[in-house]
Length: 171
Image: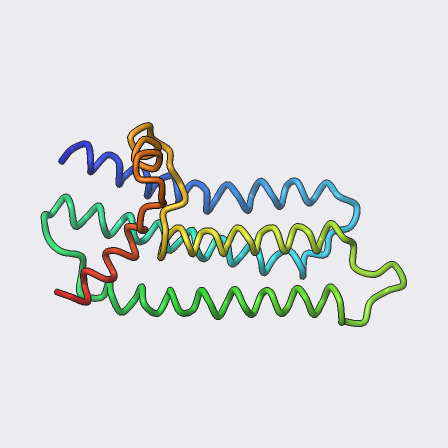
């Protein structure tokens, strides 16, 4: 049990650190550029942070559940079902916004720089992968045991949050 608690605490803290460090690092890096279309990059970055915060909350609730030896709170299932749905809506909205601004919105003679479009779509892809990682299939394998399991089974594991959502339905 202490090993599981430590692992859950690590996952929660790592997601929280990423949620703070990623936007800080990217904004500092972008600030060095002469011209950055913040209106194009910021929504995609905010979406990534929104997803990372869901991971922080999930691992925090899971840790509390393990430590107290109780099921996840009653609000877990409805909350994360709403978050899962809003993720899809937000991903579609950000993709549509970036596409519109990049390709259809009136712009100066210089147009929308390709770097801004690339950063936005790159962050959008990251958000999609985070959604898959939390709600569908585990995409991160950071321990030898996890990698060995992946090699042995030849397929991705189901995501822990997704499994907990399904378990709660049957409970």
